Structure formats: structure tokens, C-alpha cells
Image (cartoon, rainbow, N blue to C red; front, side, top):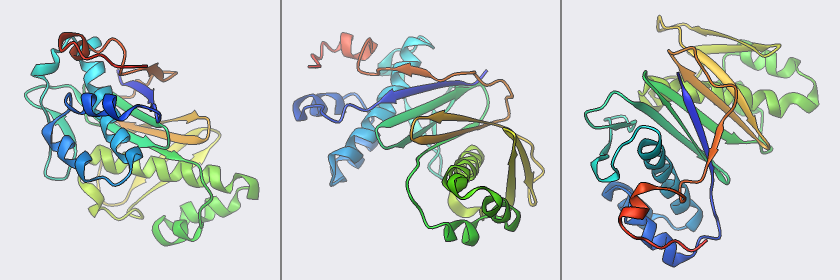
Length: 234
């Protein structure tokens, strides 16, 4: 079964605690965080990996020091020498992770005003027509529904951004999702969730999705924090 976990980022985390927590993540992400200009970007990367480590330690009984998170040539993360699959997404104040026994993809987007010409440029013609057919007040909601579905599929494939977004199409009707890929013979399953102010979509070859997302705090009960005796001020 696919499992989905949501963590809310503590924007007010002190610099002292931030520096302490950065010691818990991979050297690659530490280096990545050192190049970010804004604290918000550091926090999203930090919370993304800490959420993965929290779930692996608490739900899958890993030892934090044994977790080696690597990336494919296309940038998709995976766990070395293990058949647990996961994918991460973040937007605004949230990080969301999905775990599965099969390849999986997930995308979260904050609903903001956007130029719908983006849909005309990148989406299938049928998707753009379906979008315009919605009531004006529903345009943004439908746009982000399509966008997150498309991103979750691309992330599930794990091939990066090399796939044209108009090479596969979605149709959403009465909460039913119809999917067609014109270039690849493949039939994954999709499910969408609503987080206030956000749209979330998950793609998996496993059709079993949870009814609800589990909310967690990766800074609490993380085995690594206990073993390393890090004191995190809350």
C-alpha cells in the first residue's frame, strides 16, 4: 500500500537548531543547503530529508546511520540496497512524502494566481479545452489539479523533465481521473488530495491509496536525535 506523510515546516526554527539538524542529513543536501540564499529553501530541503528519515526509522525500523539516500542520474532519490520506494515534494510551508513497495511519484503545489496561457502552451489541447470549460471561479483549482497530476506522473517515471507535458493527457470528471499516454504503454493509478490552499497528486502502479494523509513532526521522536543527544528547542 502507498503511505503518505505530511510535515509542516517550522519557519521560526532558530539558526542554532537549523545548524544542528543539518548534521543529520546527507552531505549532498548539506552542500545544497549551503548554496541556498533563502532560509525557506534550506528548511524545505532539510525537512524533506528529515521526514524521510523519520518515517524510515519509526515505521520501517531503520537505524538512521544505516540510511543511505542516493539519487539516480535523473535526480530521483532512492535508498541504497533496499526495495522501499519513496518520493518527496514540497511547497509553501509543507513537505509531503509518499512511500511504497513500487515506484511512486508525488507533487504538491500551492494554489496561487497564474497565467492560464501556461496551460495552452504546455498541456494537451483537450486538457486546455476542459480547463476553459470550467466555471471561471474553478479555473485555478482545475489547473492545479492537472498540473499536480502531470508532475506526479513525470516524477513516477523518474526521467526528469525530458518528457513533453502534452505527450500524455488527463481528464477529471466527478472526481474520476482518466489518463492516456500517447507514447508509452503504461497504466499507473492516481489519487488527489486537498490540503487547504494546496493541491496534491500521487502516482503509483499500486492502486491502494490511503483515504487520508498522516501528519507527522519529523523533529519529534526521531531516533537519530535521541541517539546523538541533540537538544532541539521547540
